[in-house]
Image 1: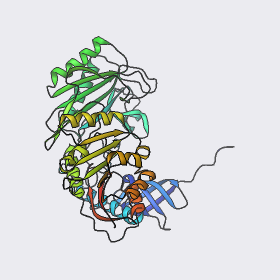
Image 2: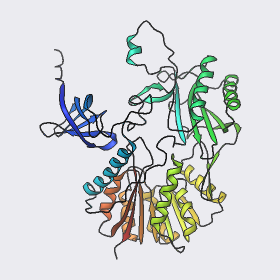
Image 3: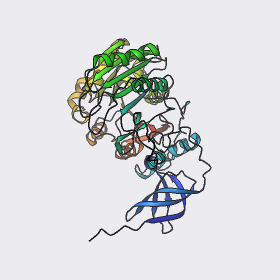
Image 4: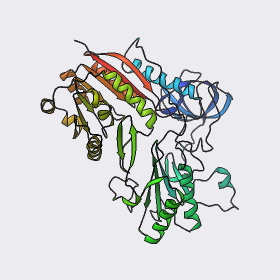
Length: 471
């Protein structure tokens, strides 16, 4: 007996009311159910094809725009709607900032249960395109085809691609013509890499069968215009490898660090690979005020460096250091915030779970002549103990910048127990931040809230909160 065919649900004249989590827009059906809508922006009136039905909400895709929102703009990128990287390009930048501000306010009110908070208007990015300092591309012999190409069975197409994975379809890669996220010669480097490979018959990687030659291309840059390029090859072929890299070296003098790795693994992660230096340095250098940060191929560094500087200035201002404080920088990463505030502190203690990040933090501190920063590697919930505090001194100020999951409950409990004067909470997820802040409200009062837009054209938003101890 055949499976019963599901009846299609089609909703007409749905007004999109607001932006929701992860860039999904939200409307209401005639019977009052929440409708989560793809491919629509707040203010649109749309017809929606529903693909998921739950008891309290529906999920669907806008298939027809009946009335365009005043916030809607034409996307700048020709790949919009297929590439999953910049899903808010169809929103004006002012509207993006408005909805990010709304998200922070809603999360603090709904999850944190904070009423009547004064939230400073979001700090927008000076550049809403060409702000990223790192992009990673994949070589593939199975390029994503358009519907028109699929239907044209008589034509033959070049199936090689150098671009981004299609969201939810890891084996399919969208060939990128022009990306608006990184300054030139980023696009030129990618296009030249593909041209040379095609013209010389190089095998692009087969993601399903895990075979081929060219695998990935990573491009990193600094504000000074230095470029690092790392190419992953699936296997060694010295003659072909050197010809490929030499071509990039000769064409682009901006590449001061040209690296490669042989990667026969089942994934593209570079952290367990042996990176080889083909020519130039094995690092590039980013500057922030009088600090220099050495960035290697495996280093973490904020991908919007200009806006990172603004974020760090806000963090330092909220910390309000006088010069005699002991500061703990939890989830310190490569120690950029710790070093940025160190001039105004007596001592800074940074803690991070990734050993490579701690090694970089120590190296950069030494490079910058900073002697009052100490860095420790360990899981925050395990290392942040009474013994650790006794050894390093009681913190007057804690700066915490956890991953998207927020702080572990043990870390929150320790902060509440040791009760420092101020806590500056930097977050890339205002929902988990609001959850943590709600746990701290009996002993701390929120004094300042400053959202910061680090990633224009996306739904992501950073938020900085200053907590002061209730004595």
